Image 1: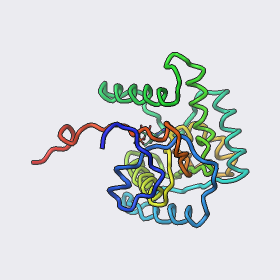
Image 2: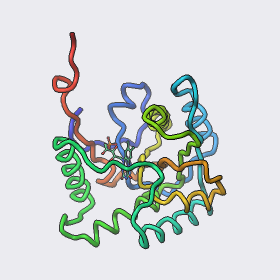
Image 3: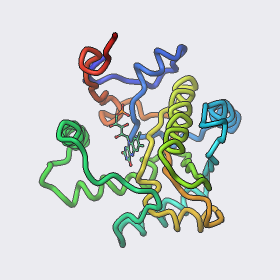
Image 4: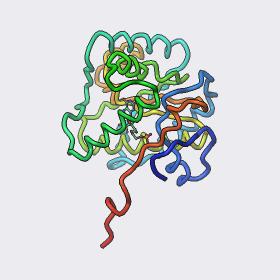
Length: 230
Ligand SMILES: Cc1cc2nc3c(=O)[nH]c(=O)nc-3n(C[C@H](O)[C@H](O)[C@H](O)COP(=O)(O)O)c2cc1C
């Protein structure tokens, strides 16, 4: 499957289907997610592998008024300050990756109806990250581990499990580094100890089916290019 517009509001019934059809959702219905569904998704994701079974994750699931308050505080923080993550956000990329990132921006702004030159509209769209793109549930992944490459890989395995399990439940997700941009705000709202580092978050909920933003399926490089057999 390549770059095209597809709708993913139905459930995926196999791992392959979940992988092939998952994409980031950036426009959600306000419909709440039943708690037993959230329990299933996050409970099963705990089976993810990790370095020596160290399980470097904690997950914080935020609904209702707490979610509202946190969205307000995060939007305010983002209006007032550049990101201040406690993880190292990457600063440079190989040129082929830069091109993919540029193309992604162009395509997202295109479907969102935003002119590339319209900085105010782009900034406004960026703030939607902190409103969880309208999702009823915001999730934060934290770790008290010393951050290193393998902790990052473990957390990536955990994150991917969540994204695929959500597809099985008919839910959409958007993983968001942006939700780790203001860790102090998140820790304050959720009363987390300082040692618990806010790595990233995700928005989860039911995708708005008629939204072009949700139908955008990003391309991937070809298997011929990236996979070698010996
Ligand atoms: C670690 C990580 C951080 C991300 N951070 C953000 C983010 O802050 N905001 C956002 O809108 N998308 C974010 N994304 C989503 C990516 O842009 C998206 O996964 C990528 O463009 C591929 O598209 P797809 O998920 O639709 O297949 C993030 C994805 C990952 C894996």
